[in-house]
Each structure stands twice: as C-alpha cells, then as structure tokens.
Image 1 (tube, rainbow, N blue to C red):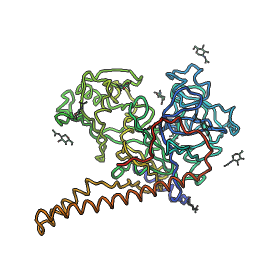
Image 2: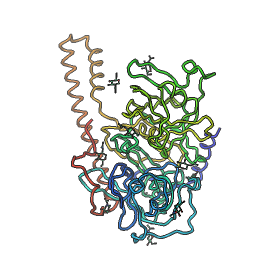
Image 3: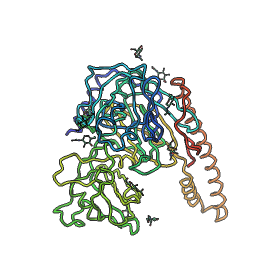
Image 4: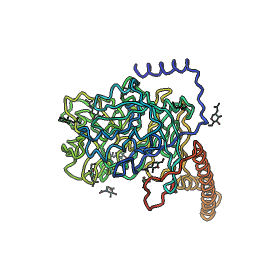
Length: 486
Ligand SMILES: *[C@@H]1O[C@H](CO)[C@@H](O)[C@H](O)[C@H]1NC(C)=O
Ligand SMILES: *[C@@H]1O[C@H](CO)[C@@H](O)[C@H](O)[C@H]1NC(C)=O
Ligand SMILES: *[C@@H]1O[C@H](CO)[C@@H](O)[C@H](O)[C@H]1NC(C)=O
Ligand SMILES: *[C@@H]1O[C@H](CO)[C@@H](O)[C@H](O)[C@H]1NC(C)=O
Ligand SMILES: *[C@@H]1O[C@H](CO)[C@@H](O)[C@H](O)[C@H]1NC(C)=O
Ligand SMILES: *[C@@H]1O[C@H](CO)[C@@H](O)[C@H](O)[C@H]1NC(C)=O
Ligand SMILES: *[C@@H]1O[C@H](CO)[C@@H](O)[C@H](O)[C@H]1NC(C)=O
Ligand SMILES: *[C@@H]1O[C@H](CO)[C@@H](O)[C@H](O)[C@H]1NC(C)=O
Ligand SMILES: *[C@@H]1O[C@H](CO)[C@@H](O)[C@H](O)[C@H]1NC(C)=O
Ligand SMILES: *[C@@H]1O[C@H](CO)[C@@H](O)[C@H](O)[C@H]1NC(C)=O
C-alpha cells in the first residue's frame, strides 16, 4: 500500500539522518489578516511578510502546493492578466530595483514544475521578513531570513503573492537548515477574514510550531503523499446533511435516499488545497447535494459554487475514514446570498476531488515534513488564546487545556451527589458551593499562570532580532487583545 511505502521511506530517511532537532527553539508565529500592503490602495488578507531592504510589506496567501514563496512584480497587472481587480488583489507589489539586498539568480531551477504555466517570473535571493504581530496597538517583531530564494512573478492569472508550503518549501527548509526553528514543521489556520469566506476570524501560520490555543481535541494523523503536488489528502467515507430544525440527517452516500444510485457511494480521496475556496466532490455526490437542497449553478465568484434556491438552516458534516468529522455550520453551508461552498462538477471531470479553503476554515492543520505526516483537529474559531509552542518533529501536537467551569460544576455536582448520603440536602448544597468556589479560584490561578507564561514566550520571541520601529498595520480604533477571556 502506498501509505505503508510512505512510512517506510520516511523511516529509512530518518535512519540515515543524523540531524538532531532542537525542540527548545521557539516557533515563528506569522498572523494572517487584512492590512495595508505595498503599493496597493486597499487592505488585503494574508500572511504578514515583508521582502527586501528596506522592507516592502505584503500579505501572502498560504499555498500547500507551491514550494517557493512568491511576490508580484509591478508588471503583473499590466501584462494582460485575467486576475480580477488586479491592482488590489495581488497581496502587494515588490520592486526588486528598490531593494538593496536583492541578488538575481538567473540560472535557478524552479521546484515548482507542476504549477501549470499559469504563473511565471524570475528568481533571486532576498531578505524575507517574517512578522509576528500580537498586539494591534504595538509594532510587530521581525524574524529575518536572509538570502532566501524567492520568486518574483511577472505573469499569471492567479493571486501571485504566496507563502510556498509545498513539500519542498524553500522558506521552511531555510529556517530549519539555519537552526532557527525546531525542524521542518508548520501549522496553518487559514481563517475566514477574506471576502469569499465573508467571516471575521483571522488566521495564522506557525513555522516550527503550532498554536495550541487554536484547536481542541486529539489531532488526527494522516500520511502525506509526497508524489502529489497537493501532498495532503484524506479519504471521505460519508457526507451528512442535518436539518437544524427537525434534526433529520441525510447521507449523500445513501442509495435509499437517492434512488438513482444502484448502491451506496464508496469512500473517495480528496486533496486539501488553498488554491480554491469551494469543495469539489464526486459527480454523484454533487448531484445528490443539488437534489437534496435544490441547488443551482452559479458563478458569482468565478469558482462555480452552487447556490440554493431556498433558505436552508442546517449543517454539512464530512466524515473522514478514521471517523474524524468536520461540520460546516449553517452560515458556511449557505451564506446570506445562499451561496454554498460546494462546487458544481461535470460528470466527465477527471480532476482530483478537492477540499478547498472552506474546509480549512473549520480545521487546524499541522504538518510534519520531517516524517511526512500531517494532523487535523477541530479549529477554535473565536476567542482563541494565542499559544504558539514548538512542534517537535515526530511528536503529536497537544491542545491547550482550557479551564472549563461548567465542566467543574458538573463534576462537582456529581461528586457531591455520590458523597451526598451523609449530609442531607443543606450539607450537599454547601459542599457543592465550596467546591465550585475552590475550583473557580484554581482555574483563575491556572489561567493567570498560563497567560503569564504565554506572554513571556511571546516576549522571548521578540528577541529574535531588534524590531525596526515601523508603523503597525493600519489599525482600527478598537483595542484588540491578543487573547480573549473564555
Ligand atoms: C537549542 O535552542 C535553545 C533555544 O533557542 C538554545 O538556547 C540552545 O543553545 C539550543 N541548543 C543547541 C544544542 O543548539
Ligand atoms: C496583450 O494581449 C494583446 C492581444 O492578445 C497583445 O497584442 C499584447 O501584446 C498583449 N500585451 C502584453 C503586454 O503582453
Ligand atoms: C513542490 O515540490 C514537490 C516535491 O518536491 C512536488 O511534488 C510538487 O509538484 C512541487 N510543487 C509544484 C507546484 O510544482
Ligand atoms: C492551474 O492552476 C490554477 C491555480 O492553481 C488553477 O485555477 C487552474 O485550474 C490550473 N489549470 C490547470 C489546467 O490545471
Ligand atoms: C547573505 O549574502 C550576503 C551577500 O552575498 C552576505 O554578505 C551575507 O553574509 C549572507 N548572509 C547569510 C546569513 O548567509
Ligand atoms: C455570500 O457569499 C458571496 C460569495 O462569497 C458574496 O459575494 C456575498 O456578498 C455573500 N453574501 C452575504 C450577504 O454575505
Ligand atoms: C482580524 O484582524 C484585523 C486586522 O488587524 C482586526 O481589525 C480584527 O479585529 C481581527 N479580527 C478578529 C476577530 O480578531
Ligand atoms: C436555525 O435553527 C436554529 C435552531 O432551530 C435557530 O436557533 C436559528 O435561529 C435558525 N437560523 C435561522 C437563520 O433561521
Ligand atoms: C442526526 O445526527 C445527529 C448527530 O449524529 C444526532 O444527534 C441526531 O439525533 C440525528 N437525528 C436523527 C433524526 O436521527
Ligand atoms: C512595512 O514595514 C516598514 C518597515 O519595516 C515600514 O516602514 C512601512 O511603513 C510598512 N508598510 C506598511 C504599508 O505598513
């Protein structure tokens, strides 16, 4: 089996490697949100990364396929591009002439051979500036990655400014080779703060680490398929639509519910990608979705996402082979314009099935490129506490344990009921109150301790290099906290 081969080759590589991982290295946290970018009139959503000397700040879209980190040249928009609203959609512009640190690499051989010709440019070594920006009211701190090879894109039809996180990622390789992070590990929450997702939640990249406050539960592990350009894929064994009003469930795999099917649908493999927003599912499953929710073709966003005829208040749950279930809430399954994150699919379409950024808006992705495994866990979307920790290769990420008061109360009550025979009702109530008070205090102290530790970790990261005093991103009047009370 392919997956066993992947494991085996990883194990062999490991046996030969003498690299010792320094898992005390702090991770590099780079947030994803909307901000001003170089030479563009509007705020753009992406990873806060600057390039060159002096810095030209950009918003880079994370790509799990592309290996090189890329930036748009000014000629990108004048060169007959089909990118809509090009001057405000590239993620910023980079002018290599204006940088004193750019060194052209005319003979560089690209690692991105599979990028289907829709994208071309030239390569050079340049100073990549990874910004960590926790406090909206304060400046960002910078991790400087000097002489890293980047692509300056001159021609193309897609958003050109990208963090290349494919399986041969240049940035990740350089950071690890220079011992700036624990190893080739990386985590992504893409967020929902971009126009297509229509939400407010911001995302983050963590190089050499993960944000333990961003997910809950035990992460589920999957092997990468490094031969694929989208190396991360999962098998889907069921997709269920639940109507919120009557709690009824319908499986899109069920041939009793969809009588044009001879037999129940079989599980299928889908690749995780950030190259598109919607999901592209097998033809029959898409057909069942259309039938069940009276969806119709639409192309408001140029991505053929289906649109519903009538309002539907319900969820869509994607069940992976190992049982991990990702549920799209009602406002994601259908937005106020009734547009869904499911793409239309032609019967004869031979392209791989895809889980686009709509899927990544619901999960936290953690990738270990040293062992070629990745992890998925349920993302905490709102009120998360930013808790970046080192992601040691070969280990399983662990979620931050939130002190949960209702849990304490429930346990406390059960404890009191079990012991309650002695005391009668009054005694029971008193014990219960005492228990709750003690536990609350303990929670608060623990929370305080964790937060102090958290803050200290971040402050330590600020020492990577003296941050140049630069303008914070165009800040709203609202005061944002880097953590929010749960
Ligand atoms: C490992 O990383 C820590 C933290 O950055 C550093 O203090 C220590 O010197 C490193 N150890 C080695 C062996 O490089
Ligand atoms: C843009 O396309 C037109 C028509 O295809 C062509 O004549 C022109 O040279 C192109 N411009 C550039 C800058 O490539
Ligand atoms: C990135 O590199 C990997 C393996 O080295 C390759 O499979 C993949 O196709 C490359 N990505 C692109 C866009 O070419
Ligand atoms: C080329 O890549 C772009 C962006 O990833 C995608 O939209 C397009 O469909 C691809 N074209 C082909 C022929 O694969
Ligand atoms: C980057 O390149 C410049 C010029 O080639 C050199 O002076 C500098 O030491 C290099 N820095 C690193 C970290 O390799
Ligand atoms: C619904 O989503 C579409 C496409 O993402 C967007 O154009 C539209 O503004 C959204 N509608 C509302 C009311 O949010
Ligand atoms: C997302 O980032 C933007 C820009 O910094 C900020 O204004 C906004 O409050 C953030 N949203 C959330 C939900 O934190
Ligand atoms: C959807 O159903 C839930 C539960 O019945 C209800 O709380 C919610 O307001 C409904 N949403 C809409 C948009 O009707
Ligand atoms: C539908 O599935 C949900 C979640 O598994 C379950 O809670 C609910 O009871 C089911 N509804 C029916 C009618 O079986
Ligand atoms: C980007 O950062 C540089 C310094 O690092 C600063 O001078 C500049 O104002 C910033 N640009 C924007 C658009 O925030």
